[in-house]
Length: 390
Length: 214
Image 1: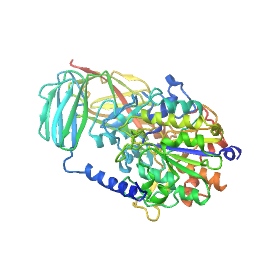
Image 2: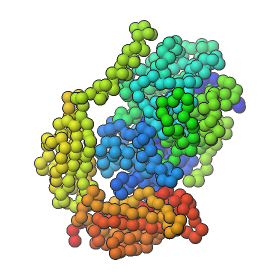
Image 3: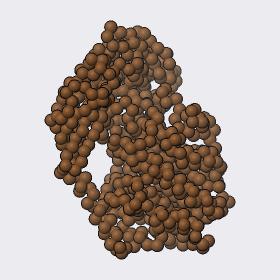
Image 4: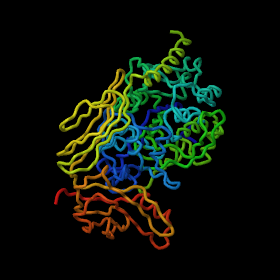
């Protein structure tokens, strides 16, 4: 695969808790260009897919100005089941308001889970969407909250199904996998990194972990033989117990999305102003939907409960769609990729790039691949451009 | 700071944080509502609450008799226009807030939900009970619109109307909005329940235009 061979650095940024329709759904609204290649928002007042019911009343999506919310939105496994509102075996995606009212006891005319953002609020995501590639079928791997989905992104195996203060059991941590294959990697973090939750402190706090403040200078000064082949960039998490000089910019409600957009801009400017941008692939995703609405049902992906997992009920679907943007000279600008992807698509990509076989990461990742989850390399290999059917 | 100390600090902070959140001095809200959610000017709205902490009921715009209340209770307030009621619960370490809107005589509202299909009856159907929580007894129907992608038979009490897709009916005009509405959409010849439900995204809805008074 020529394009993948030419890429020297893969950069992964995982933000927090926003759904596809909430952040990028506007792309298909006529007043914002009406992109027919993006499966976003359309006919909001009449299309039944956008009707959410609470106590017999129907609520529909509305344009939301960015700003702090009164509450965080419910997004745990049990609350997501309410949001999906499965009827028979079909997720109807009609319970986002119900889950919010249950959790917050707040019932207002414009329930925050149904708010969608517009380009003035998501200026950087809008820039990336218009100039690079949107993936409109990128799902959180699990219908669960932060820790399970980040664990999937970094290991491919779901060992937990909720978010708690604990060391997370894991296997096949991506850093170990990369190190075993001699792949140079680096992680940039603002304040506290997520990775100490895996408990491997000696590695996590070693030389591969740099402050976000070093990103631009590292890019400018790294010699060719020390440039990382894989870079993970972490925002400042809003729920971090302390903030070391960074304001939260992870997009996690109730915080606004604006700081996260500036964070993305800083990353893009640092990367794209380097001569090495010509051989770089930047992937920006969100870990999970955070309780915001989306109209596309999760994919049926069944995985058995792994040995050593801290839960008993197996997952049978992915989570909700999340915003996903890929910026690189190797993707065609202003296009949309419709293939089914989730966070483990990145692990397939790494396996393909650094082991020559997209099935070389783990059996758990392959199990998802066998059920239709593609490698992130697909966005380059086929450059599939959707037709306008809906 | 050594690399051995940082993990310990991190662990300590992560373990202390939940303890603070779950502390005995924190406020919480167990219930809050303002019903009916759709009212007429001059209607009495019942606000019900239950919380842990010092409770204050407020509203925007202000109505009479707001302010500090018992930690659980129920009280009626008269509304003249769209009103947002708020509940604030405060304790030593935290303050919680939540909101409930009452809308006065909006032009219309959409009601409905996830429908069920019966192969035996060859129809998708949904029952929509509208009671004290949803609508004032003073609200009257001014029109009914079928926003579904297929005809529906709409029934309420002794009134029944077949409304084409996107069509409107005057059959319910001046009837109270409150009551039990039923929607039924017949399957097309040869159509399966799965296909029919897929065609309407599993939902049936109808839009009611409102009037207050005569």
